Amino acid sequence: MRKLKYRALIVALFSTAVIALLGYFGWRAFNDGAYWASYQANGNIYSSGKLTRGTITDRGGKTLASLTENGIVYSEDPLTRASTLHLIGDNAGNIAFGAYRQFRTDLTGWDYIHGVSGEGGSVALSISAEAQREAYSALDGRSGAVAVVDYETGEIIVCATSPGFDPYNLPEVLPDGAYINRAISAAYTPGSVFKLVTMAAAIENIPDLYERNFHCEGETVIGGGKITCAAKHGDMKIEDAMAKSCNCVFAALAAEIGGETMQKYADKFGFTSKIDITGARISAGRYTGKESDDTALAWSGVGQSDDLVVPMALARYCAAIANGGEINELTLKKGESGERTRLLEKNTAERLAEVMGYTVKHSYGEENFPALELHAKSGTAEVGGGKRPNSWFCGFIENDGAPYAFAVIIENGGWGIGEAADCARNVLNILIQ
Ligand SMILES: [Zn+2]
Image 1 (cartoon, rainbow, N blue to C red):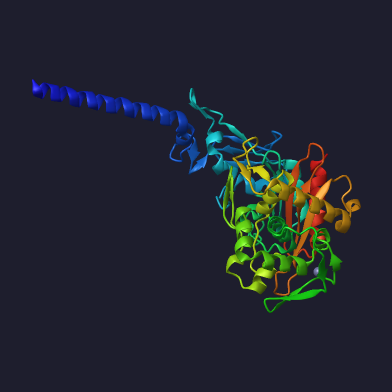
Image 2 (cartoon, rainbow, N blue to C red):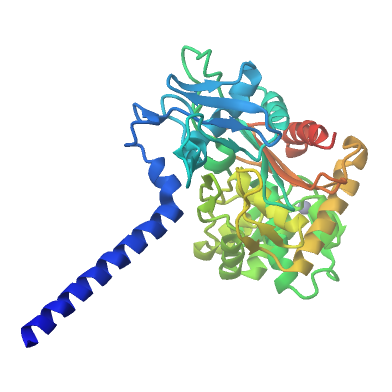
């Protein structure tokens, strides 16, 4: 009798385990079915490791590429092909983070009822193909990148890199780094655009920042090392130190704030770590103020020393400034922004926005950006080796229905307010139409 009871118990336990496992499998299938179906070993929808169905469009529904038995079929327009190639991916698989890999669960067209359907699915990227083409044209073969994000939604509107190439007309020799998407995967010396970071730290750590009188003699000595300015800027308040982009003032502010605190801000703003966004990953930049001596710390506050910034990370920071300090984490997929993230205190964001508006008005000239309600900062980053400096321009516009933040870099482009600003103006003008 006792033996029978024991056996019944075993059977009961066993069947409970089977039911639990079935339930678990059902739950997993419901949640992960699309992912399983898109697994590369699924011979029905893959050919030599590549998905054979699905369509990739821009945010307006314009087809950018289709996945077929013969690989990726791109747009008929050569400029669309070259400008969006790094977002779609290439047939040889040399480009990282192409949409055909990142969004394969959407592209298989899997659903709970039909499984994988014949036609495949589609995915709408967040980018505007028209603005993307304009950015690629404006870069005009020079090495560089254009990043534009919608600061209200977190959608990436432009993610353009140069040099690129037309996948249907491969040059005999590809330009250096042609597979790299410089907007998200390349880190550059930021130069004066980094003053926006030093300024944020100063606003929150130097209580009398706005009452202080600053003075510039064209150079100053910090920690025994010389810091130089482009000119003798004379007497000024903090707003004019930004508008004139005075190295002496911002270098001294970084030294006063201290390496630990400067580091805390650079880290918090996302400049030193990889940032996972929907459909891609922004590479890490670099900031080492915490370990620097006083002279290097001072230079780090004006974006030199060994500072490195990724263009999309800077556009993300500008988006936070434009949006009261908070953003939806960025996405390359239309309507799919990530978690709400606060980068800056509201008051700090508002003061940065103000000083960027002041800088356009008093330094760059609003008349040079007609029709744009622009807030911006330029950067001219010394790169050494006798090369022209890198040209940066970043900021945001407040035009109705065009909530866009941006960052543009042109390698060895010279003054920031020259080549990078021209490029930004062209792209923003397309976006406000
Ligand atoms: Zn100065």
